Structures are given as structure tokens and as C-alpha cells.
Image (cartoon, rainbow, N blue to C red; front, side):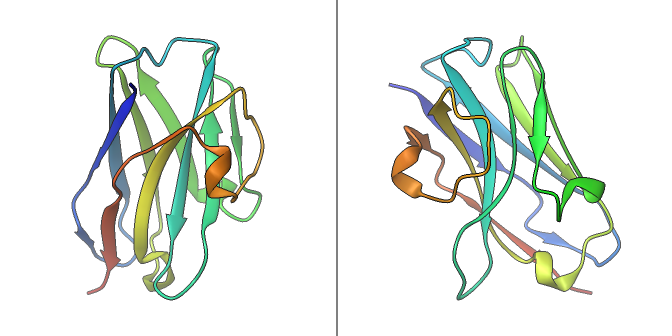
Length: 126
């Protein structure tokens, strides 16, 4: 059973950079079977797909976020990272990492993903 655990600062000031961590257990992030996505949900809104990384370090981002977003990973730590710069108040929301079988595109259908983290709240405010 794969488990994902997000962690991050909680509160970030506008214009600053957000760094989130997704620690994976019960499976290796180097497997070609799963891809690892970041998805967020602003308050009162639906899921917004942000980007994905796969076993060969290829990444694919939402066009609307690509200029501000970077996904990377640390194989020995079995961890996936999200970095987003130039934060705005509208970036406030719950941020999730999720694993899916061979999915390497935008998808906001929750059932498509095999595993989800519990999410971490990010508030952008001065």
C-alpha cells in the first residue's frame, strides 16, 4: 500500500516561493508504474491539476502555472517536491500529491488516481 504525506510551511507571504514535500512510503518513486502529480483545491472551488513527474524525470505542467512551477524528486529520500514562486493570494488552497498508473497529462478526476496524500493547507497572506 503506497502512502503519500505532504508537508509544507502553511503560511506564505505574497511574492514568496512555496516549497512542498511529498514523502512516499510503501513503494518507490523510481518505479515506471506510477507517476506523481501535484493537485490543488482553492477554497470553494474544484480540483486544479498542477503538474506531474515520472520515473525518467520527465515533467509536464499546467500551461497556466508552468512559468511559476517546478516539480522534482529525490530518489534516495523517496520524495517528490513542488516549488512555486511569485505566490499570490489566489494560490491559497489545499495542495495534494497523488500517484496514478502511467498518467502523464492533466487530469482532475479524483478516481483516476490510485493514491492521494491527506493534503496540506497553504495560505498566501501578508
